Image (cartoon, rainbow, N blue to C red; front, side, top):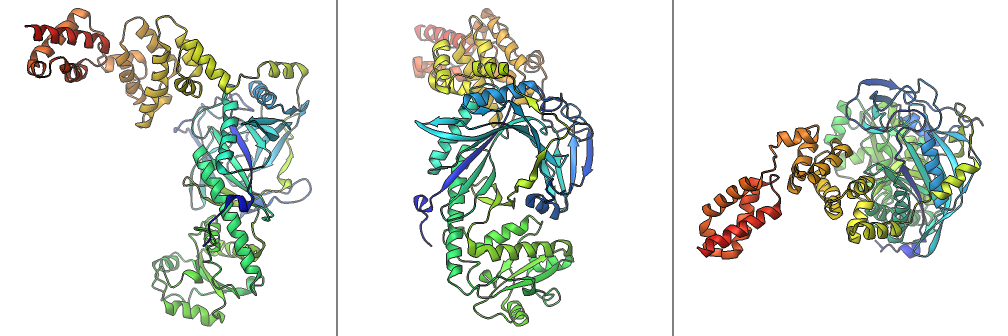
Length: 633
């Protein structure tokens, strides 16, 4: 097993950034983009592949059709309508989304088209009720500058986001419609050579440019990165979908480059062997022959009325288990391939005997198919409706193994690997949208877009630093949060400390979220009202986190209700002095032993009783006064 070298592999990476736009409604209807776990309507569809205008089927669509999935859709009338259900034609294009897309294109110096033609992109995995996604090419060309180097822009599109996958078991796949139709901008960059850390910097820079508009959605799922990866002499580009975190991006690029270069090494070894392409003639059913097999996996398959078949591959011994780099094996590739037919996996000769399959079971296979020591075999158990389709895919994959990298679409995993998703789509998946007329971009709209190009990330941070006296770290946290507009609105009021406001918005609320509480229950209106109460002396600084916690737990619906439910009341100074004096007298022993250092433990005791009812500064001041009095006596 050799060491992988990024430089030797000649890796090229092209980024595609998909960013939700923060508008008040969806792209082709008036429904607001609200996500909810409550659904008032359910319906089912079964999507099928259709021929393009040129009479051709898209390979990705055919692959999805072969799974024969029934799609269940869950809808909420607050966030979706007949447009999302494909029971009503699309409405007019959302102007806010269009204008924001033009601003983003202008920011990237991209060449905007004077006419935009809506297109349909065939998608029948169920993520669109229509069987297609509406997309519009806004512009081409342009660049983003990263550390003094210009990274070219291939294209910028405005399109609908897909439905949200909420379940996929057996023959049923489930989606919710709350996200379907949300405006999304797709930016495809030119492929570049570089290490994963450099690719991460490019993605980070583009993300910062988008967030500088203050008009993009924040949070997990609102920005997704597809990564197109290729290696030299590979001959194919692999698209990896669903990268949501920058740290994950680095791992994905490194793994996929290693996987592809490993496949080239496997192909080179195969070319030196006597391997020849195989056909369906190499397949034989062994269901009855393996009825006595003790493997729990095989016995379960027999109990479920599955069929067991074996595929002979002449002059292929050792190739399934050959691993040029750690974790890169052809056997693993085929195991992932069949999982997308709803099949658990396969057994191959390089890993047997194992999994309860004994030597006598292997001998049965070898005798039936006349397998010698130079041959390999592969065993698969699956229902009758799936097994032949899966075997056909396996045969095609094995026959391609001596060619290197196969062009396909893969899915990013949380641990940084990639798994097979579907074949790469072809040109036949795109065709004109007949329900939406061409969209004109006027000269005035272009002028407005140019005037509204946002300040750079660094300029915006400097402005926040200077205007509100924030340190640069806190300024970046505020600017990079969904609360930037709210922060500026609250901080513009007199007697409000901007640093404290930023700390509450970017630290306190985030910490409560990390503890599993729901920040969506805490509206901007209630946050703003909380700071008004603080400004008017109705609550203390220390009570804000208690109030927010109560609302985010779902125990209260408003600020006033939270104040009542948490029994928060601001004590007058006389009552506070009485309580502090009592605490001091009850802890004279601590004061006499620790002198002025007693302020620490006494502060803890006092805050436990008075948290949210008086400011920490006032409690500290009164405690010190009582400590000095007791020590003086």
